[in-house]
Amino acid sequence: MAYASRFLSRSKQLQGSLGVLQQHHAIPVRAFAKEAARPAFKGDEMLKGVFTEIKNKFQAAVDILRKEKITLDPQDPAAVKQYANVMKTIRQKADMFSESQRIKYDIENETKEIPDARAYLLKLKDIRTRRGLTDELGAEAMMFEALEKVEKDIKKPLLRSDKKGMDLLVAEFEKGNKKLGIRKEDLPKYEENLELSIAKAQLDELKSDALEAMESQKKKEEFKDEEMPDVKSLDIRNFI
Image 1 (cartoon, rainbow, N blue to C red):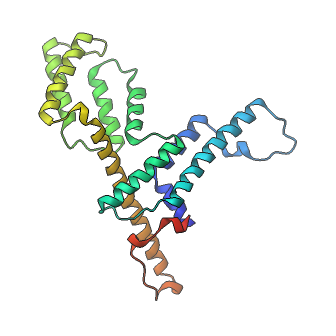
Image 2: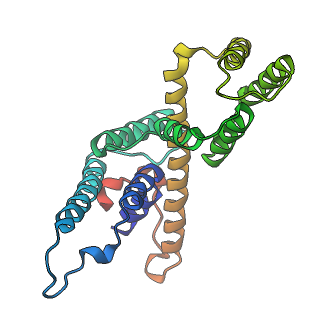
Image 3: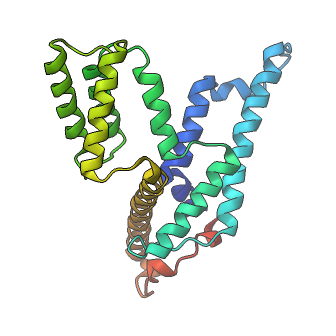
């Protein structure tokens, strides 16, 4: 069970989504503690409902992990894809964001009050860095170059409310995307690759945790003569 707890805690999408839910509703744990002769309030049922929803989503995730086989081998594309599919199923059952959906949510919420295009692009860069994403194609540099060109043409900073100027910027983006080989119809593929890269990173982290736990066990007297199993042979379902 201890290993299962580590597995669940290391699942960033599960942990993060549950954390967001808890923070969003601002529910302290003590709100659910039993209190003697405490009068009932209307809000009690609402809090109870929110707590039950979070608990049910967490249980749904555990139930899926009890059924699905996960191989701790981040170098095996099949194992990575299987893990990504398991996490996708968990998100769907628990009504959680995927990484691409989370990024879209962050962009929409963190940029809605930004008036100028340059600050907008800088915020996009901040979100990308914060989420640990790499810009392998150089799209970010291309966007800033496009902005420089447009602002030079209009001879002033570009505001997002400037429809004509923003149309020019979008046109420059489209030219840059064409050079980089980025097509709108390929966006689903990019999203899938993003989820696979995240799944690989999480599997690598889980593998490291498992190896660390086994090394720790091996140092104990009662296990010193036992041969540690190959981490890829571990079946997480046996620990939940």
